[in-house]
Amino acid sequence: MKKFFIILLSCMLLVPSFGSFFVYTSFKINQDEITKTICVQRKMVFNTCNGRCELQKSLKKYADNEKKMQNNLKEKAEIVYIQNTFTTEYKLVAPIQSKANLFASLDAKPIAVSIATFRPPSYFI
Image 1: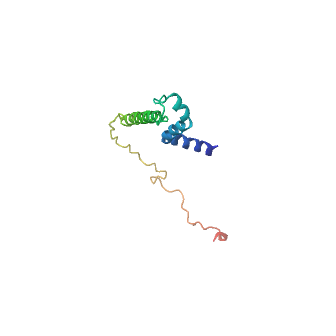
Image 2: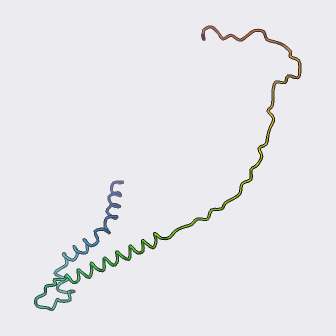
C-alpha cells in the first residue's frame, strides 16, 4: 500500500511538468474536429492551418497560467514570519548552605573498643 501511495504522489508531482504535452496530445486526438469547428480558417478552401492556431492559443493560455502560478508562489515565498520572543530577566539567588549532619559525635567518652579485626571467610579467598 505504501508503494502505491509513493507512486501516486510522485505522479502528482510530475503532472505539472507534462502540461504542455497533455495540451498537444489532446490537440492531436481532436485535430480533425478542431479543424472543422473551431479553426479560424475553416471556411477557406485550401486550409493550411489545420487547427494549429487553436493549438497556439491553448499553449499560450497554459503558459500564462504557469506564469501566474509561479508569481503566486513567489509572493507566498517572500512572506516572512517574525515571532516575538519575550525576554525575562533572571536574578541570581544565593544558594542556601546547610550543615552536614554528623551521626558520630565525639563529645562523649567511648563505651567499648573492639580489638578484633574483621577477617573474611577463607573459602572466598
